[in-house]
Amino acid sequence: MKIEVGEEGTENEIRESGLDPAKVADVGDLDDDGRPKRTGTLWTASAHIITAVIGSGVLSLAWCIAQLGWIVGISTLLIFSCITLYTSNLLAECYRSGGTAKRNYTYMDAVKANLGGRMNIACGLAQQANLNGLVVGYTITAAISMVAIRRSNCFHERGHEAASCQFSSKPYMIGIGASQIILSQIRNIEDLWWLSLVATITSFGYSSIGAGLALATIVSGHGKRTTPTGIEVGAGITSAQKMWRMFTAFGDIAIAYTYSPVLIEVQDTIKSTEGESSKVMKKANIISVSATTVFYLMCACFGYAAFGNYAHGNMLTGFGFYEPFWLIDIANIFIVLHLLGAYQVMAQPVFGTVESCIKRRWPDSKFVNKEYPVKLLGLKSLNFSINLLRLSWRSMYVVVATSVAIGFPYFNEVLALLGAVSYWPLTVYFPVAMYIARKKIDRGTLKWFALQLLTMVTLLLAIAAACGSIEGFGEALHIFKPSLIEK
Image 1 (cartoon, rainbow, N blue to C red):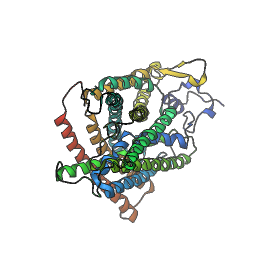
Image 2 (cartoon, one colour):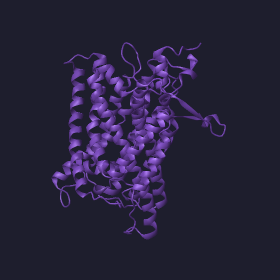
Image 3 (cartoon, rainbow, N blue to C red):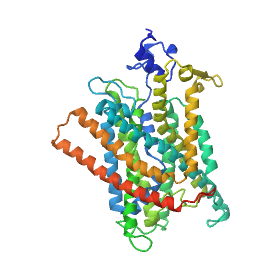
Image 4 (cartoon, rainbow, N blue to C red):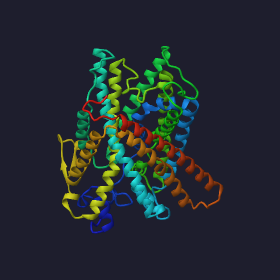
């Protein structure tokens, strides 16, 4: 059976997917919405989530425990894992609109379908700020890891106190930008499954190395002093500094579990019939959050036990460890590989939003819609296609993101603020509000009060985290000196 290209709705869906409508002829190749059949599975969805949620920030969790102490720190990790899992499952139910069962392809679509246009705009602002900020932050962090490899080798050759082991991260940022221009030509998030798989493996790799080195330090008897309440007020730290650091730690832990901005986009890759995608996505949420929590607890607890109340902000790039230098190098290579994949998982929703708008505006433009097939070595698995819009716009996006990273090396402090501000609406408020609207939960009921309590408590935590981030940003501005050499 053939489809009629003249059917406007189906044709537009195919065009937005990046395919040539004239080449999509068999209805068997299409899903119920007229788009090409989705091929994602439970495991590819889990890989996408782990790629998005486990960043190199996992290596800073020991610092977070040092600020909060054993009791509050571990409790905070477990509480935020439960909150993330619960609200992510609520969000997974919003992939299809109630009543019509129409698919929502993006987070913004889900909010618009359930809460209306104004909320859609607010969601879009928070989501785009978060995703674009992460892209810049990943560029900086990956470059720092590349510099750490060079410094590790330098320290090994010249000694740990060598003053000359200082290198600029800017050339590495340019190199990362160049590689991202190539990776950005991958059509959509569904085609990223192999990159997410590599990123997932490497994230477990560097997390395991960091936890293993910390455990080795503990077993060898060189672990530092820890306390139930974390770093103590006294010489070198005031009560105000302790409070700000605790706020920042709350924010860092909350942000470490954030992947809601890409959840709907990941769910849209899963092959399933009506109702099944939410079940698969919920299983993926359980697998991903559980695996993430285990690794977070390992790195946080082992790291704190090894370095005590003065744990480093990053166990691997902050040189909590110097030896074995080759293992530190491998861990930092893993960080770079993971962040290359995480960059794409976060950037693809941005690419998709802009390209969908352009394709709706110019549906007959060859520049916008035409795909140019490229065959490599005669192998079908290596074939791909080039689209001029994708090539030009995505390349320009990467250049701008890389330029921001080079121009603002303290941008990670800005990212912490963006993450703290966007965490509450994207991870808690919108999923809870959409759930209440879909289930028609009456005001004043016990369930309504419980959901509102969850919303208010996480809002207060987000405000505290934002305050801590602002204070940290102020310190970064105070000490920042433009220089080609960054310590």
